[in-house]
Image 1 (cartoon, rainbow, N blue to C red):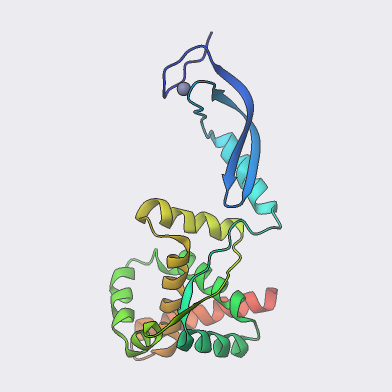
Image 2 (image 1 turned 90 degrees about the horizontal axis):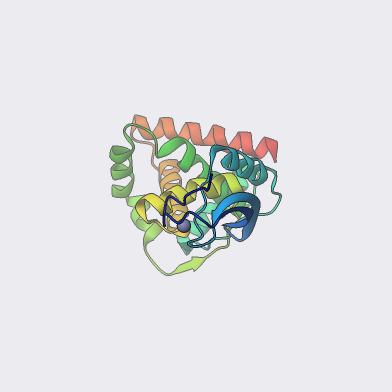
Length: 197
Ligand SMILES: [Zn+2]
């Protein structure tokens, strides 16, 4: 029986062939049923599993976004990084990972985020000339950043900026019990990272 393409409904040209799927600047290659007419292929659970295993085993970074931070934020990051015994770029990566994995899904995220943005420290960190920094990102964090880009149209650097400003403000502002709690969780998260590094 001839397979029919679900997109263009062409029945004669679906063939099992090698497909290149760009994942950031890397390319995942696999054989899939592909429509010769419109190029459609289906990401089956089997292919997704294969892609996941490939991504996890990748030693290279798949993207290298360049978020912008003010001199005040850069200085704060340098200081905080040395307090944890790590460098600035790894700290930015840890902040991004903490924010994406532990913060955005909190049921009261909107409320906490609104409190954070009202803080004086936050205001000071966003004011002034901004300098870019390159942040190499691995597959697992890339996948989370990709969700933000696809769902809310937020470019990778912007999500990293949001993550860093959120974490930095939480670390400097401790008057609210809820923020103190998050700051504490963040510190544990960085310490785990620093120990594993
Ligand atoms: Zn087609």
